[in-house]
Length: 300
Image 1 (cartoon, rainbow, N blue to C red):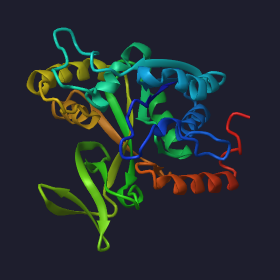
Image 2: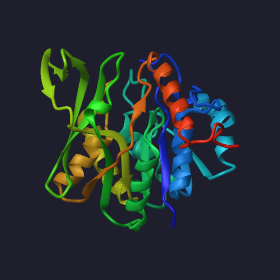
Image 3: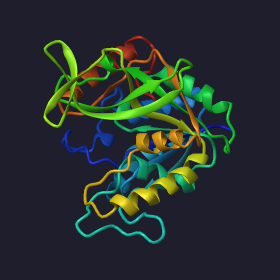
Image 4: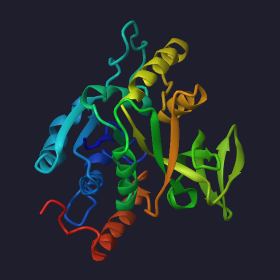
């Protein structure tokens, strides 16, 4: 039973100024998410599921989906504001879905094996897929053992603006205690800070950051749907409320419905949060190609 890779590709890319999912950054004109799929195939994943929006389905299938479908099984799901549990509906004025936790739950019809889920616009590295595939290979669909790949915070910042990161707290065995979402993170005056309520708060260089590379089994869907219904009951009427994967995971851990292991990896993370990040990402792919980690054209 091969694990599944689920890719969060429905985001708007408002800070970037366009659809990052379709931006060609690789040496052969590939998108970042194609490198994730290539690494996943090498690590032993057997299916990829794209979470997208209906309005760019045609372009997405043509540029990416139809290409990778020659190498791995492909599935699609759509994250829209009307995909809600029975008895709930989007409030007047709501224009966007409910975030990454909502997106994960939308993928349920296409996922029947242990799976990883990650962002479309982040590069995670070959080694990260290897450690995640090894973890998932030891699970069954009914297990309640989850994982994430952690990255050193100092290696996840942007030179062109602030970022949001889930900061991990672990026990002595490397199991996650909680993930706290920190926003407006940047390096200032030689130190890393996040801002909250107009105040700066320091973070450590080696704080463990979750870059949204999670490993789950289908058990997460039952747990997540329960939590999502409670969330909608309390905050569903808010036009901009968000239901995040870290919040879902923290709740499962607090109620002892799951354990989550933080997997270490030597991979270098990079992403394209801002338009100015694009040039740096292109240079990094050129370097990875020169090192022989990837061919000049991923798909031949």
